[in-house]
Length: 124
Image (cartoon, rainbow, N blue to C red):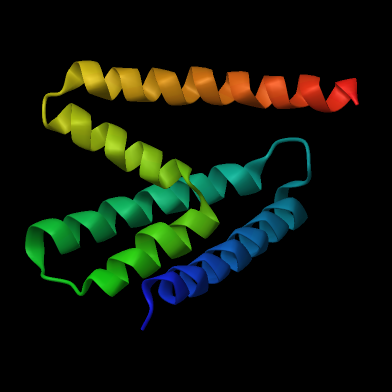
């Protein structure tokens, strides 16, 4: 199957899962705190940690599954999982400088870009 189609199907499943998590969290806890996003990010981090460890350290896997789960499903669910996994892998491989640069750059530049988007949108 075409890699793009595999990723698209996984992304659709991840996006629907994120919507379901958000809806369940909103119904259970209300809207005072973004629990749905927190839960989606935490679940995505758990899944990428389990999946990538099992299938890079213990088992051989068809690359299509990696595309489906990591890029597709988890990309639709959350990109925080990729950021978290890549940062942890850098730190575990003792590339501390790169690990902390990755963490700080994503946080600071990401928040900065969000703020810029808000400011630009408010100008129009």
